[in-house]
Length: 303
Length: 272
Ligand SMILES: Nc1ncnc2c1ncn2[C@@H]1O[C@H](COP(=O)(O)OP(=O)(O)O)[C@@H](O)[C@H]1O
Ligand SMILES: [Mg+2]
Image 1 (cartoon, rainbow over the protein chains, first blue to last red):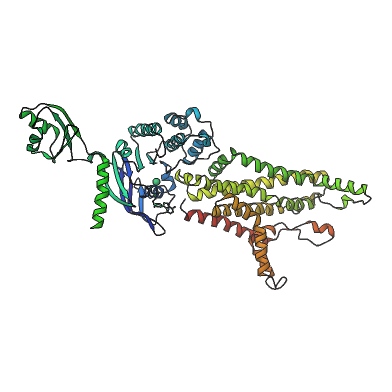
Image 2: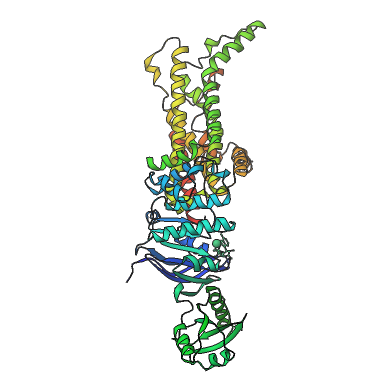
């Protein structure tokens, strides 16, 4: 069993009448890249704000590393919530020195993290002269300066151009391969799918779904087949593993039943004397899964 | 503690506005207090030209022990400049939202407030140190015959002065934390004395000298002013209070505590 780094128990935050986070239960284990997925306003930032001590919870509790949270716990976590926050009149370097001073981190880490986010050449310029992409990268650097066990990133690619997005994701992947636990809040499905190992879906402050990313689409395999054979569609329907069949651009898409895979289909066709020219396994995308989860939730809510 | 002070000073020492305002404060404060005697001489020489002679040696402004209370009272007028710096320092933290990041990075809310309070202590001590130095130097220059028994008389005014500056900076800090916007806070800070005067006027309208007049000394800003009473009336042969009143100190200490306590409670309860 992997060690639990964060455990949230019935966490709730009301802003007046608005319930931003409702009875949230979650667990994050060491080494996970945990995605918090949800549309804007679903309570991701508010949740992270409570975890980092800047938003006072209405009720519920949470623990980091199995302990009651204090400000000392927060020193072991690197976090950027919503927007990069720095002193505009200080240089990037000075800002990081200040972060290190507050966190009690070794200032010798600063050149290393500046190198990682590729800001070393601009470190002595004032923060207010930075582009948005540079600000986001400095924020990641500041979160890493204490060499934290856990990294929390909230919409780290928000507002960036495709180049900037690609750079940030590359940095996150680099950090993840270092074995750090990462919590990533995002409203972007493909971001979570590309970088996360586990994910939770939030909607209007409620937890809709929680699980590993690679389990998404389990038993819901789609196999693409192409072959020079006139009766291919009839044969595919005969195959006991096929749940349904669609044709798109001359390629058949076979939705597989549970426990049937592409190799079973291939063997079946081969036995019938057909050699395929194209065979590919497609997992259902997280987007479909995500929309289904949200649709599921609203239809059950209606019932 | 020193660690927290170091954090707050690191924010300020690379901030140009900090140097501008502190420079302005310490320069005007130093210049005014150090040059009073020269100004008086200049006025006297002008007066002589017009046939009225003032014997400035009859006014022992800069003689021990008068000098302590005189210079300290004058210095107290300048604390408003310093309090503007305190307001800017705290409201910046809200405007840039850096208070949020400081907490996220691992400061507790108490540590955050304490770092600001410690800077206030430092600024107050620097004011005291500067005036102490200037009074000693100018006192040695201008006192005709120094009697060492007089030298230490009235030095308790420096304690009162420290409290006066620190109390007012605490008030500025609290105001900044409640209002969070620099312009509005500074305006309110400058109007504070007037607002308090209006309130007192309305409360005590019909009873200026009677039974409840003594309650005035409990008002926050008045309690700060009462620490160092105006000394100059003594040169017009009037009776003045030439010592620090313990009751005034007590009231000011309680207010100072409350200012910082309210500031902490406000920060503790708010989502930032
Ligand atoms: N300080 C606040 N005061 C009032 N409402 C807030 C505050 N912060 C967030 N909210 C509301 O709480 C809800 C959740 O917001 P947020 O946590 O920022 O969502 P997300 O990060 O998922 O986009 C939103 O409806 C938002 O308007
Ligand atoms: Mg958000």
